[in-house]
Length: 221
Image (cartoon, rainbow, N blue to C red; front, side, top):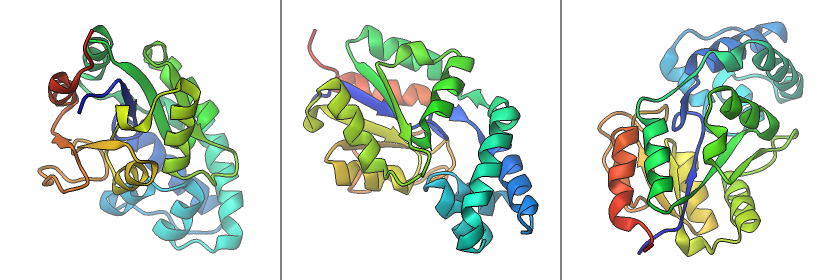
């Protein structure tokens, strides 16, 4: 199988956003009367699912407070948190190489779409992508919804697309939307050395490894 479109997750795949996300989440929870968490293993669970679910599942926040926490989180993340990030080593080179070899590139993230666009522009990556799709203000989109939105916008058959991501939520979204999936273990979800399972085309150990894995699967010129 060859692919013509590579869809990248953002948090934990393109950008290491952990510092800003963890600090902002703790601040939002405290603001609505909850308790901050210092355990990074627990905090890492905040990255991947829809944000309103994260406040409930990770912090045990009462669902009635989750909407307020999301509003506080987004305002604070816009002001400060989004700048506490950096592209993973080799990401820029990987994107350049894939485009030079004929791939179309897109982003599919559960991060709020306008914020995702601004962050990719801030870190100089936005110009690599033909489409950047993310969650809406209500955070009701699933990963599959977002992948399907990318496919619809670019007019690419699902059998020609591969999703690259770092969490089981990405893996499930790829399965639900009918696209192939390459996992990465350098992000927040799959631990280092995680073994490839049957739902994955491959497991990438670094950003540059993504390019190496995709090279044999490139479309013909």
